[in-house]
Length: 285
Image 1 (cartoon, rainbow, N blue to C red):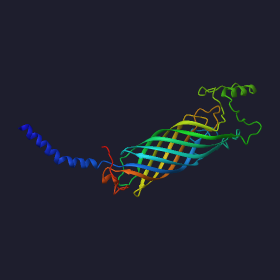
Image 2 (spheres, one colour; image 1 turned 90 degrees about the vertical axis):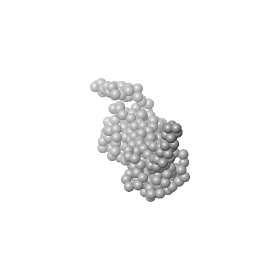
Image 3 (tube, rainbow, N blue to C red; image 1 turned 90 degrees about the horizontal axis):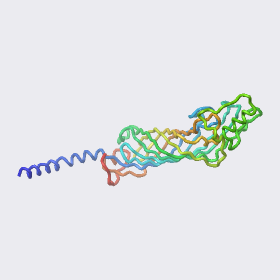
Image 4 (cartoon, rainbow, N blue to C red; image 1 turned 135 degrees about the horizontal axis):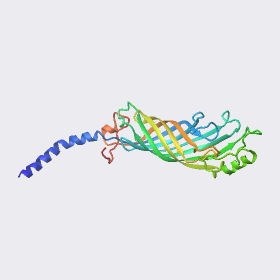
């Protein structure tokens, strides 16, 4: 008899308190966002021509692109992106004795996982900050290196397919001092390639923020460093070049929320930046 009484007491408690607890839990549920973004901003290509340095920020060029992002969780999202830009660099006053000039077109493809530092801002009064890490590919299309200011006595542009060791041997033939390769270099590396397309895997690392404007629009800013694994994106890997070519960008974006899967009116946001949509099968978090 006591067991039956306890059974009904438990059912009564569950019946009274479960709706309240569920409704409170639902208040924590947020919508899934599908967003498209148009991206434009300065890109920075670090070539072997010009001033020394892995990151060269003194000669920006404009890049344009498009991103698709899917925020499936309060803290997590994914982003797919593509961008294009025309880049060039020259020795100029940095190394006038060489006079090298480099030009190329860069196409970047990126897939990244985003982690939002703060919980989602339902009110839209502050930006949503995130960091992202992913993988990608960077294609250098028709990279070209020239030496228009070459004069007698300057450093001649290396021949195609000559290795670093062969270049050193030629140098030693006409100079009494014996120059040695650095231990950081591979003597079998070819100094210069002439190829129409060079592709390098990259590992992009980003930090950025988005602001909600109205019900459907977003403004964003993002800085991404793409760690490359290739030193031939500029068609050059000269002696003394120990680092791969690097590419980074500071982008500004305008986004439009393509679709929202809402779980509750609270998350769908009659009072936030989305309109209410039909609830789909969701999850708790």
